[in-house]
Image (cartoon, rainbow, N blue to C red; front, side):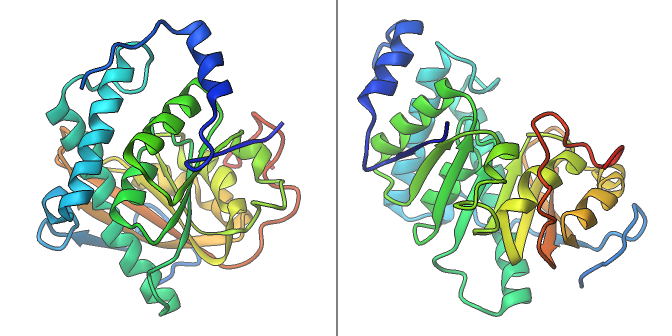
Length: 286
């Protein structure tokens, strides 16, 4: 059953259900139709060109700090992130999430020439809300959907968007390979993003059925994704998409950079995709 939660409709029932199982938390205050590892188009986003925390407005900075405080507080009772300190969350999660906005904007404007405002974005496998919550803060005109299958994480997300006061976010508790067959969501988003969820060939089947024709799928990956991207070629094309470009972005990961892999949805995804849960690995079988 699909459960949708919005910031405007705070669910007391879900909170009660959650706290039956978790002890109370103490409050503190160039399109490439065919590509290979050797032929990936690369661009680099410099630190000067990329959006970062210091470039945000004062109220947005406050929202980010509230998010970090809530994440660390709730992380004491449930597994949301391996990062335990505020500076680490800022560097490894917040700045990483902000860094992908610039390549998304450039790619979207390059292909559509339309406004970068009022986009519908889905964060697939949102987890603790990364990058979706940060994108919603930085781009308040976007309508951001956080797609997460685990109820306890949805409870956290519901809490944090209410605490921050975000009005442009909804939470959907479901699996990507289920919701992709739901006509209310299928091919309904301008952009799908995913960070630290799965391999590219699996992500292609999870994310691309949700993207409208002409929209983008953006995967935030590590410093050297070439082999992974090459293995995802077949899956990407089967979903009706092609690689647009990869962008190296500044990061505070141990390798010093991350990569935004950006795919363009050229045509509709065949109706049989996504397949039943657990079958999304088009690099091996179709």
